Structure formats: C-alpha cells, structure tokens
Length: 601
Image (tube, rainbow, N blue to C red):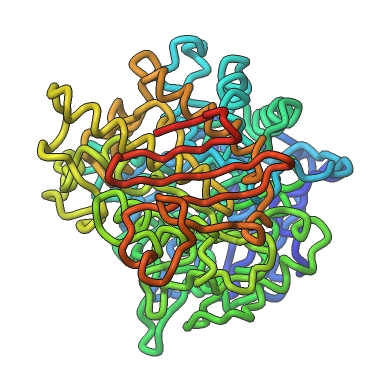
C-alpha cells in the first residue's frame, strides 16, 4: 500500500480506513459514539487491513483492535490508536491496566478523530537559514507563568502567537523557534508511582497527532501560530522523536505498534528488543514502513508551514543495526520535493554501539555540537588554552571540515537537557532528588562550577563573578561561527535549582519565571544578537578573513595558542575594523567595532 493511504480518509458519504498489521489474524475498526463502541471487521490487503465505513465523516472518533499470536503481543482487549492519527480527543494518561493482558482499555485510551479534508497551498520560501538564532522552548513551560498571557491560553501552542510573546522573540532577534516535542505522549510508567509527570514530551505514542494539552485547537492551532510567527519573520522548527514510542519495554503499555505491528521495533538475533534509545523499544528504520511513517509525518508538518526538524537521538534513524552514513532515510529526505527544502538538524548521538556520530550526517544537515558546549565551558572554568576555544569559535573545523563556507555546527552553551545556563555557574553537582531516582539520573559529569558556593548566594562578589561568567558564555555563543541556539529563559537567568534533568518536573521548576527575570541580562542578550546581525559575524565566511592574535595584539604562534588564556580576533568591517577579545583572567569578552563598544561581558 503506497505511503499516504494509511489512516482515515473521508470521501463522499464514507470514510476509508487502513492500518498496517501484517501478523494479525483479525483486525476491527472501532467506532465510538460517546461510550458506545461499534466494531466493524476489516479486510486483509497484504500487510494491511482496510474498511470503508458508510455514513462516517470528519469528527468521528475511532480506534482499532487486533487479534493474533499472544506471544507476539496481540490482545483484542486492547483498544489501539491509529499510528497515522492526525487528531485525538484527549491526552494519553498512564494506567497500569494499559499493560495488563486481557484487560479492556477502551475507557482508558484517547480515540483518534477522522480529520477534515484540506488542500495543500504552495509552500512559501523558508525563512530560517543556517546562522540565524534558534530559540529552543518547551511549549507548556514557556508561558505557564506568563502574567500577560490569558490564563486559559497559557501552556499552549496558541500562546506563542500572543503579541507579547512575539515581541519578546523579535527583540531577541530569533530566526526560528524550536519547539520541544508537541506530538501526543504518555508518561513513563515509573513516574506514575512517584506522582510525577513528563514535562518534555520525549515519549510519543503518535507521531502526527498533537498533544491535546498543548494544542486544544488541534492542527489548526499550530497552523495559525506558524502563520503569525512567520508574519513576524520567525520560522518554526519541530523537535521530533522517531527513535522510540511510549510503549517502552516489555513491561510497558500496549497502545499502538505493540498491538498492531510489533515487528516495527528493532530486535536482536535472539528476538530481544534493542535498547539503543534507552527506552527498551527502538523503532527499526531498516524497515521501509517505519521510514514511510517518519517521512509522512515530516510531510504532514511541512504542509502546515513547519520549516525544519530537529531529530532526537538521530543515529537511530540510520541504524540497521549499526550506524550507516548512507542510510535510506537520508536519501529519501533529500529526494523529496517538500522535505528537501526544509532544514534538518540532528542530535548526533544515541546510547547504542557507535552511537556518537557528530559530523557524520548529510552535508546539508545541521548538528547539535556538544563539543562546543563543553570546550567553551571548560575554558571559562579555567581549563584549556586559547587554541581549543578558537577551534570552537571558528566553527569546529575539526568536526565539520568538509562543510564549506557554512559550518553545520549548532552551537549552544546550555539546552533543555542539562543545567540551565544560570545553574552552569552556580552548581558543581546535579541536584535531581525531586525526580525520585536518588539523584542518579541526569549527566553526572556536566562541565559546571559554583565559584565556591553551591547554589544561590547572597555574597555580592560571587554574584558579580557568576554574572560575568554567564555574560561571557553568551558573548562567545553569539560570536561563534555557526548557528547559535539559545534555550528559552537563559536570556533572563532561568534556574532549575541545580536539577539537570527536569523532564519530570511539570511545575515551577521548569516553568519560566517571567516576573522574576533579569531584565538587564535580557537586554544584554538582545544587544549581542543585534550586534551579531550587524557585524561581520552575520556571514559565516568571515573565517577566511580572520586575523588571530594574542591579547597584546601580536600574531599568534603555536606556543601562544597553547599557553594563552584568551585571544584577539580581528575582522575587516568595511572601512572599519571589528574585533572579538576574550580574556579569561578578567572574565570578559568584548565585541567591538571601531571605537564603538557594543557588547561586553
């Protein structure tokens, strides 16, 4: 069955349904009217099952049930969501009964909703280009505490279109917002016992259907928000999770693939689920139908106006089982007339064998560069010399040597995963006790420091030093060649109080504190961003004209590179000259043009 024909498709006086379940012995389409369920047997069509439902149209709630070998996970008591669902009537809520064989789950499961037909409009040119500022944000946590956003709108995709939010993004010079996962997800089962909730969304069940908690207005809410942001000159990038689903390992719930097509998950030679995603159920991109689902998902969102995609644990998509630089998914994206015009961004690592693949993705992809993060932090912590810092400042040519005039490096000094930027300079150790895992979760060796006091401090000297550290890190981020990425709230001092894995903190730990923000730091970041856009740094080709010097303005030598705790970078700027001066001893980064000082940390 060709891609694009799966799911529910309304036609004249009926809706056609198709779902993949090659190992099933029987599949039923389940139509819901309130709590009443009507089951229609489906007909086998090769690896798929099809049904035409007369009198059924947009808005109809539905699901599937499937029977087959019990040792393969089939259980007709389980209501199953359509992998191609576009909209759901409610969110997924974890319940232990979802994983118990023989227990009916119709009352526990959200139902898919037959979508309204819509016609594609021509896609406008992409706004976002490499080198522009990416602003990573968690949709829910971003506006939950914003005093100017109406209460009923807070925490939603629609809130991103509020004028006060748009104005904030424009002030920062944001080229694209990168939304952390918005597809419908379910909490990990261990969170249920702890009374915690997943705050980040990296545990999806359906790939296309938006989580109703984030988008109560469904697909149209996302489309409207994209249009408003585009009018303001801001593109939208989605963080997508194709490496696993919320069904987890063998102890997880049966929600979708496990009850329809368990072979969609990768298995080893002994038939055991492969755990390269850290969840126990890695999707198998060696199978064409898994790739088709990912490609159809990307096309669906691109048609809504999404300009790019960031792939969580991206090496999984190129595994079979080892990582393959020539994996079929890369060629399929490159050949697609729609997807080839979108920006692809890889998180270039997973936890499987050979999982660290920084620099190994296609030449037109961008990649999250954790070496930039760690080397810049180490330098400011007092480790390493100017040479390592200059390599990162120049676009990490040791990693992206063949990238041409535009480096593929996405530079960041903090992200959603790890310490908030303010916590990088205030905590030497993680403080994740609230996650209920005895402080064992999260990265144990994150590069951070506290200037002598762990956590918040009233000491004026420590506060001044930490502020200087934060400003220096931000200045280096905006000075560096590549694509800068800023995580929402780091521009005004967000803190998670030392929690460097706040995925389970759907509360004020991860919700941005707009009323308590550091407005002076916020203004400083806006100046840095403007300076970048108005200086030679806006063109990634500046490396060709770079004049590297020591802090006394002498040409660099190999010895000075390895000894110096700073550097001076000079660049031509028309008839004037522009320079970046980094001095670790003075805890200062200066960006200047002629005699006009624009930004200083």
